[in-house]
Length: 259
Image (cartoon, rainbow, N blue to C red; front, side, top):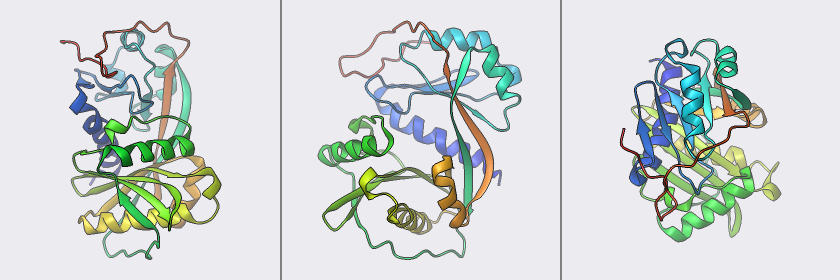
């Protein structure tokens, strides 16, 4: 198993899966993108070819015409990321570490949290609000219900709101995403409890490997749980771009143009 590629595939599958129902995903020869006007996520453009096969000038022009800023993730095995980003007029936004944990013969403590599945618009609104409190940006509630191969969770301590999480399955991979703990509930062990639940759910699904993308803030917890660091993800934005809007639907979602 190529662990790095499986991690990337799970992540990009989630972006594609939440965007497709709204005609907000497109695939071209060298890249894929998912963009939704009224949401801070996924709004990504990622490459499906090695960087040496991609014209950075064309990337810059395409990003300028997308109408809204798109984050461009560059993976650790894609060649000289820094040189490519400079040629394409990109500036560094953030860095993460792709991490993984084998799940065979694993067991994790019971989490002792109240868990709710997000299955209706009301819970999706609650999840979206909690996520924004935890991360500072908005995910549109419409993206959170009836998502293929994906379970969206709300976590509480009794009646006290705690946080959020997402589990997205691809092949034998349990992709862990959007672990958010409300600011007032941090440093109380809740992130670890949420992880215990998601890892146990991954095992129940028959997954052989858990993957995630960690910030510096969360990396210590994941290392403590046995995750290994596999590769670097650097995310970029177009530097001071004069974005040129494209057509939008009345729902606020991007309309797919004919290719």
